[in-house]
Image 1 (tube, rainbow, N blue to C red):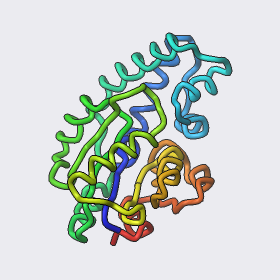
Image 2 (cartoon, rainbow, N blue to C red):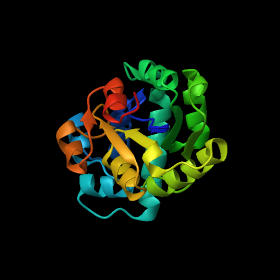
Image 3 (spheres, one colour):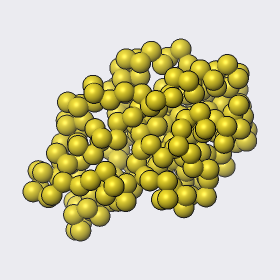
Length: 218
């Protein structure tokens, strides 16, 4: 394994409780009862508009969806300072670096807000590139992963799909990696419980150090 693409929310950053609280603040705007972490894991999907449709049991129009997205991010911004890195995130980043594996980060969180969060933890010393969302709110990850890898290749040179490991916490991470022929390991600390992640047909682990081992990165 030559290069790792890390996910951020729910993978390197342990922010699941913050995310669910922000979803509940959003649901309160339409007087929908709050959900539990377990319900979040059971329903979460991308595009995120579909997630809200599942929760509400009805279609969500574009203007309402954009209002939900604004409400979610306003709440998330108020709460995210309480989030910390996953317990072994620094250990995993250090181990990959020491093994000679390059690393980058791709998140579907807004790029301009992602950068200061990553800098707060001084992770630039491990990562050759950090990309967040610059497109449609709540979109699927595949197109962004393609763009991210093209940018990484401008630094590293051509990467064969067998050179790249994606480590994330969501079924969309696995689907995006599979579409591009990349290896993927899913970490059960975020969006979906392990039993649901298993449906992706990739290794599912309970720590980021285990993710490195399962993905052949060390």
